[in-house]
Length: 307
Image (cartoon, rainbow, N blue to C red):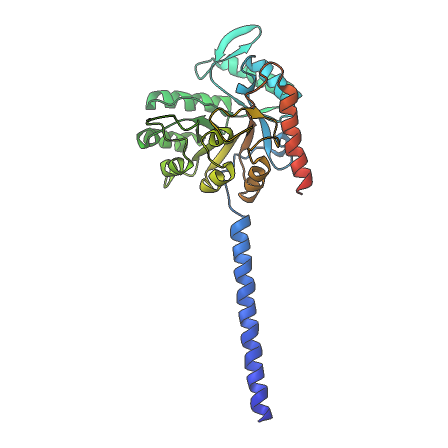
């Protein structure tokens, strides 16, 4: 009898050990799934990052000034990278608009200005890609500029059909930028992260989203929830905080509005975000460097508090 009890006890012990191992492995697997999600990686060097994130500005923040002045102001605010946009005047001494048609000499002048202030250009947009010919011209320019990504606004699968081969040919990513949900009837659909996901689903992984969190808020969408929908496809952000969930919402300093900025940063970390954060601050246009600096400081503070 004692021998049978001993055998049963040993069998029970072995069974318990096996079940415990299965439980531990399943927990580790679940933890891995929630902490190691990947995103497109722009391979931005660490010297152009604030902690783990590549942080700078969308030059549109300084659209009352020139490209050269936007570079200066980004550096003064503590940014490390910059996203240039088409049409901004080059410099106080040269009123040529900076776009995909500028000369190689102009591109060189921009790079010299960037080097002077220790910045890296990481994106160009929002730039229209209305047809295959224009799209090729833009990608050729982006290659000369040396950016790993461009930002555009394709709204149909037909547009994606001629953009995707260029992404593959030039090895330059393309992020779809969202504006607010239109009022009334409209064919414009990329305000909706679900539709953006539909546009890129099954396509080259270098196609994804340039997530404008402020415009999501103006569309009544939670930025954190939108990022979760687009997980694995988030190339870059136009990061904003906004004072209210309404179309007329106004940009405010990070952490003072409804923009879920802390939650956004946490979600980016969970997704192992490898893109860049463009601070696009559309307020206080002529005196906004201190405001942008506060936004950079918010990100630094969040990183220090969440090591």
